[in-house]
Image 1 (cartoon, rainbow, N blue to C red):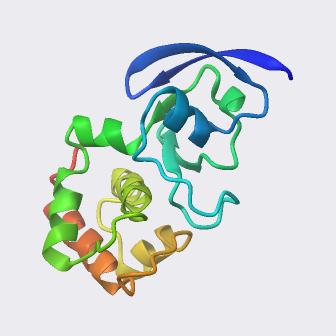
Image 2 (cartoon, rainbow, N blue to C red):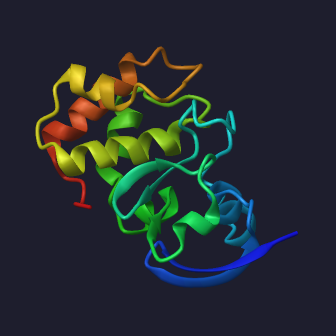
Length: 160
């Protein structure tokens, strides 16, 4: 089995590891770094549960090799949460019932944060478009859209 060395920054911390060349980024952050807030849902890039930020851009970590993150900055839901970047979003999700089982929530919070970092006043249609790649079996989506719209109106989330 082929192994590769990678150097990257994860949640602001320099990381140097040797990984199997075929290891996905989601497996790397979960198994090697114990950052289990990034979930594996479909493992095909469809459900959005594995969303992370790569150099500030939302990316599906289940279809990206860890080796592809070499030299880049990765931020997971833990990193966003630790620096308070999702506090306003999380509070809005609670107010609006935008989470139930919570499995999809970390990926949706990452996507919503990325949207709010680039768009100061997203429309409801813009929010729906930004979250279109996420599957939530519990909420019916409207509470999630309501929560993101509420957080956008408050604009208290930290920037990128």
